[in-house]
Amino acid sequence: TDLLVIAVDGPAAAGKGTLARRLAAELGLPYLDTGLLYRAVGRRLLDAGADPADAAAATEQAQALTAADLSRGDLRGPAADMAASAVAAIPAVRAALLDWQRDFGRRHGAVLDGRDIGTVVFPEAPVKLFVSASPEERARRRWLEMRGRGQAAKLAQVEAELRARDAQDSARSVAPLKPAEDACWLDTTALDAEAAFQAALSLVRARL
Ligand code: C5P
Image (cartoon, rainbow, N blue to C red; front, side, top):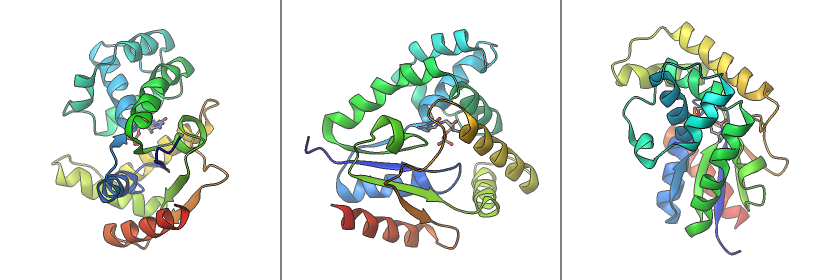
């Protein structure tokens, strides 16, 4: 296929979303935040009063997911973060979301951000970025983002939750968070959003 798919993976709050969205706009490609799918499944479970780690309940909710679930306003925040990570460790949940992601990318090409885009969803993607930053810097960014949304939070607690989620995402047996062997690493610790975008664009252009 001649479709351009760009995979953007990395740990939580590394700046993947901002970067992927800008790359998509620059290259004229659709953008998909795949974390939103897991967040929406987690939210459906919380709403149903079920445990996000309950495999049968989570699978049922993943199969019932609709487009409207993805535009809900309550998909961000500590409870949604951890619920997303819990459902994301369940193989049948991942299987239910896989075709959806592949269909999205295969229609017109796409920039997708997540944890397993370059390793599982589109292992044949011609461009794969693994975006990271130090845990301290990622916690600081997430904390600022939460404050901007009016969510009160303590920096130390934000960092602890971020580390716990990364550990859970990296340790799961199905599609763990890890760089694809052929991924380009981009460490954004010392980069602002503009510098990170320019660096990513250079990496992408070098691969096309
Ligand atoms: O990217 P975001 O932080 O919104 O993702 C929320 C959670 O969804 C992650 O912590 C991870 O457990 C899960 N996820 C995943 N695979 C993806 C995207 C997200 O497992 N491709």
